[in-house]
Length: 235
Image 1 (cartoon, helix red, strand yellow):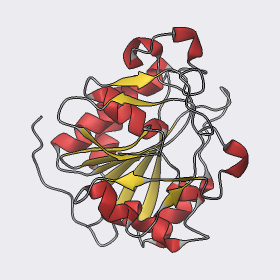
Image 2 (spheres, rainbow, N blue to C red; image 1 turned 180 degrees about the vertical axis):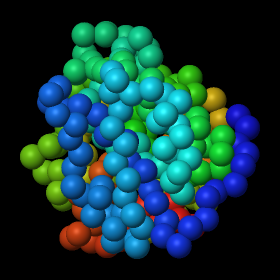
Image 3 (cartoon, rainbow, N blue to C red; image 1 turned 90 degrees about the vertical axis):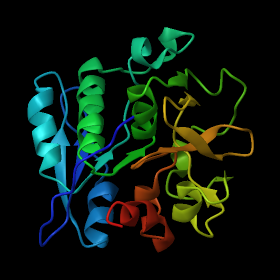
Image 4 (cartoon, rainbow, N blue to C red; image 1 turned 90 degrees about the horizontal axis):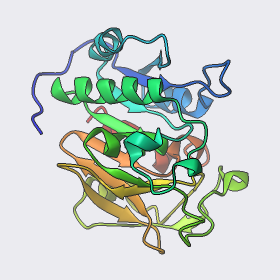
C-alpha cells in the first residue's frame, strides 16, 4: 500500500462520518458518533453513502475533511466479504460498500487517517482484500451480539503490546459488543492487534488506519477513556 499527501489544515478540524440506510428508507447514524467528535473539539460532517452516491463526489467530500470515520451498520455484501454462507449476511447494501471502499482509499492515499468502527472495521479489511466471518454464533463464538447491553462493557479485550490498539485502549480492559460478523483475515498491509478471550479479532491496523470491532461512541459519555480512538484521528 502507498499512502501519500498531506492533511488539510484549518481552524477547526473536520471529521467525516459515513452513514448508510437503516431502515432502507432512512439514512441513520447513532448520535454517539457526532457527540464524540464534538467532545474532542472537532466538527462532524455526515456523509451519506447509498445507491445515488457517486464515488468521485464522495471522495472529494472526504478530501475536504481532516479524517474519516467509517461507521457501523448492516453487513457487507457477501461477494465482497467472501463469507462461507452468503445467506448469513443481514441487509447488505453493495452501493454503500463500494462508496465506503472508495472513501477509505481516497482518505488514506491523501494522508488522512481512517477509523473504522464495527462494520467500519470490516469494510476496512475488505477494502484491502480481507475476509469476514459470516456469523460468529454459527461459528461457535457466543455473546458477541449483545445489543441489549450496547452501552456497557461486556467482555475483556487484549491488545498487542506497542500496537495502536493498545494505545487507544490505554487501561481499558473491557469493551461492549454488538455484532454478529467479524474480521477473519485483515487484508493486505493490515494486521490483527486486539482480540476477545475466544479469539475473535477486535482490532486491525495498517498505515494511517485503525479498525475496532467495539463501539466507543456508545461508551464514552459514561467513561471518557473511550474517546481515545476519536482523539487519535487528530494526533
